[in-house]
Image (cartoon, rainbow, N blue to C red; front, top):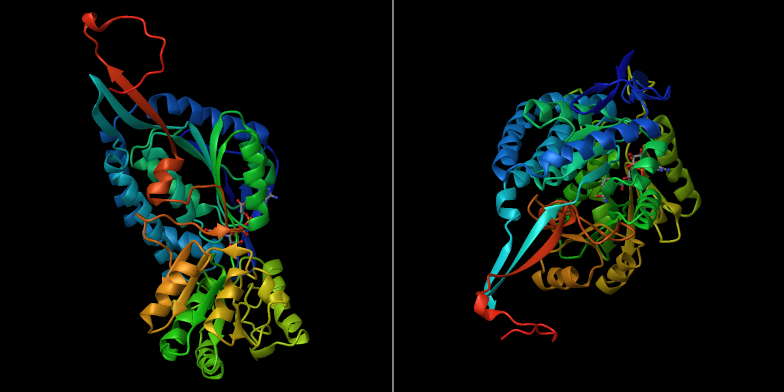
Length: 497
Ligand code: NAD
């Protein structure tokens, strides 16, 4: 049995808490490794290493930092296949999807390589006689990152490259369910030349998170995960005076207007609902079909859904892998009979599904529910699995009211050929990321990612310009080099002349 120790101060550190988490291969349903779970003392050791490293790292030149980041970019790229294999082995998603995740994470390393541009300050000369004013941004100190299971490489990469590029040091607590990619990313950073202690990775669960949220030397917390934990992280760490961004769950709607190309819309719905087995925060989980197209659209989605090939993520023939745990698979599957009882049409029922040779794997087939209404659990809850609901709406107005009444506001999309309708939707919809004929509108690295409402607690989105602001604090310097002849006491409030 492989053991996964922590990564503290540039080396592997065996845990001493005596607590472990069993990491499983979801395709086989078998335990493959034991992850050390950090206790308070181990969190303190990692934070102390990061605090010590901050002294020199925050003073290092931008040239030194970017040289390391450029080397890191090459290393992550060269090891993309290996990282993808680690992801598939512990998360279950298919290898090509895992490669896509690494590529999207790499975008943020590339963003961080450009920190010299992003961190440029501002200068105004002669704001008053002989007075100049400049604005600079400085690092915060030790930053903690707490990440979810569904993007074990990409979400950590959303955080630490920009944080360390800005001069901070970092303690990452990845999901205990699939931690190996995060540890490998830290090893590669060391190989790229990152000094010891700048990036630390802890195996851990709630006790480790709670210590990070209250540790006096942690200046800021980046969190991505489910809404209840995001809310808790935001409240707890904010109460300790920390800067917090906490991204939560989602229920993403895809609005299909009657003039849309229904083949393209069906392709998009199937890809975005069932890709990564629906375990994406930007997955489409509700299609809102504006009549009279619902029958035809549901038929096209069903036809495509039935053809999907489900199997182990390491098999190149598989388009969709297993779910993360048996408990989660059973919870997801439970929504289908419940929706039937509550009056939905179960058009495709994937709940009774096994993969030959992988009977113990956490597989489920894909399910499609039609005539779902907002009172049903399948609509109300974030299922986080391959169950797509279709809600029928009588008009655009009815559809947008439905979408805007959701407690979440992560991503949303409209499918139409009408530019005016799309423009109206962009302005009216209450969500942080909008796709126009794009089903999963995850912004590129140089625009920021973040939702509204219960999908994000805190002011700052992740990556892009927001991340530079989140990971730095501003300082404004007013300068005068007076001539001795300019002296004299003046108790009046300074004014500009
Ligand atoms: P989760 O909330 O269960 O776990 C996220 C992190 O919090 C993990 O590191 C976990 O160890 C820790 N954690 C769990 N319970 C905790 C507790 N009681 N106290 C302190 N820490 C705790 O989320 P998950 O199941 O790993 O990930 C799936 C969720 O993440 C979904 O809701 C999904 O929508 C969301 N997500 C959101 C985004 C986004 O950008 N908004 C991106 C990816 C995932």
